[in-house]
Image (cartoon, rainbow, N blue to C red; front, side, top):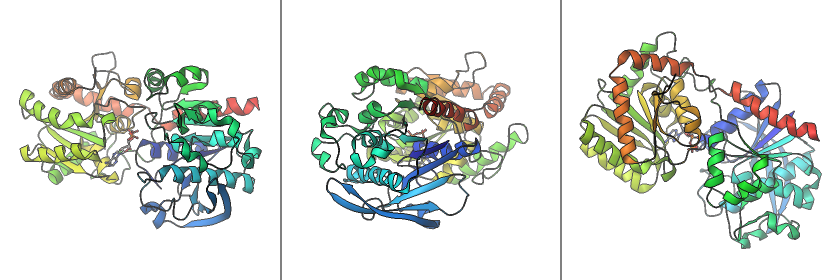
Length: 474
Ligand code: ADP
């Protein structure tokens, strides 16, 4: 089968969060499984895209409601990625440094989707399946069915994968003039609560809808930022497929970002050399357990709980541990985390920003990773942490609920909080310290964690089965 993924992120070309990791891995692991997995991504001005060479394979013009625009398609010249990556270049719209965060994001992503479909029509590339990801690509199934220019793609089944249902791309109706000319009778397929809502439209028009864990799918039915009714109506075509991790990238035995590589069977004790590097670099105490947080500093991740919880855990439990936070996001949280440095006694530090190599070193060097998330569609951090023998302390929600078994249960290997609150987080830290104080148990759990299999080798088959169910019907 040929499966084309259309998304706003794809690692390593453009990554902001988990979406990028997953789309890149899907392309790669579909090829490893004997299929042709390709990805279509905007040609941003990211470091990776600028540093690598791309071959222009197609140029044309496509029509938006506001006029024609020129676009080009570029392809990767070498096979390093393990899948074909096609970049859509639209001068003045997509060729920017950041992936998101511009005032004209609506126009940018509508143009991106239009160019992608226009190319598929004109180049006569006819994939067996198109898998679109999140709201930035979710207008594609609507456009394939209701834009005359794309009618030759009408019969290709489309899967919509929701990585984050909180962001829906909703826009005022006056934006409809940007869309390529569409069948106006079908306005109801675009509308949700008097807005054009791309995610809602995708849920209605796609042949199948997947979310990145089963637990998250069930949460969306009751809490999905206004789409609850829609999930109820379209429930029969929805399913949860747990993300995997790319074990070719995330492997402590080969990871070039580590000070010291290590494995579960051999030289596990060397893991601590990575902790040593972190402690030296960030002025922390090597003899105390190290808790880390890595991620977007936003409400979904409950990052706002961190400053006060860290301070109060020092007060309530004592200065028995270190904390290191890596992330960027809401200014207030960033400021509070920076301010907290004033109270450090060589046991707290923070790095505000995005740093891929540092994140790898932290997954390896930490003893515990904190994920107090309010919402976690799948969560990759806990999966990476476990692969590196780092114990997860997580809120019991979404994908965290699905992937972590509490140490109080049979064969448990993580620590679960009952809600995203300061008290629960401090209690989670307290329980982690109890575990740390029992070296034999702590070591055994670390080895158990490293041997768990959350790889794409396993998860990719669920996607393939879904694609097959759609192509067999045609
Ligand atoms: P989300 O996509 O909701 O942000 P995920 O857990 O699915 O959360 O994925 C987060 C990904 O982004 C992980 O690969 C994590 O390591 C990475 N990441 C998040 N913030 C940073 C950061 N500041 N520096 C480096 N990597 C980061």
